[in-house]
Length: 191
Image (tube, rainbow, N blue to C red; front, side, top):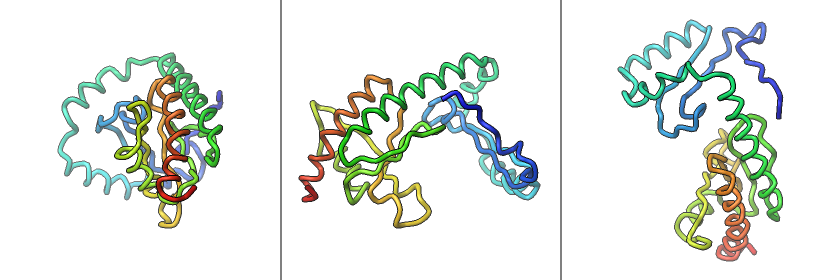
């Protein structure tokens, strides 16, 4: 949305309280690429992290090869990625917002939505989508949001929907979800 991000590492007085964690898998939509970094100015956190990292021995060779050229990417690469993800987000937001009973907020930095659905159990809905439901031979994989909360009672009726697919696939996903939610409610006696 054109806003600049302020790093927590630059906030005065918080220098030793900030831990930055980054990964290539998140930054470059490279699922499974297990390579990243941790940065902190807190000596105790640094030492504890170092001990843990040394137990890992080394990152996977393929991940190291993939990371070789990353420092050669210029700002235009990142600007293009931001523009693409904003377009994906907007397509998904517009479509999901039109589904009756679904509530969500537009993300301001994440590449996923947490959507509240007119359901009672996100785990059951996710299972239903993968094992019981398809529309024209296709379905949508969602992640139950309950596991993303520290409080056990939060997120039971929510799912996480990432916008990692192309826009046309996201549009198809919205169509599938719009049909699947009432079908699920009917199948579970919630209608």
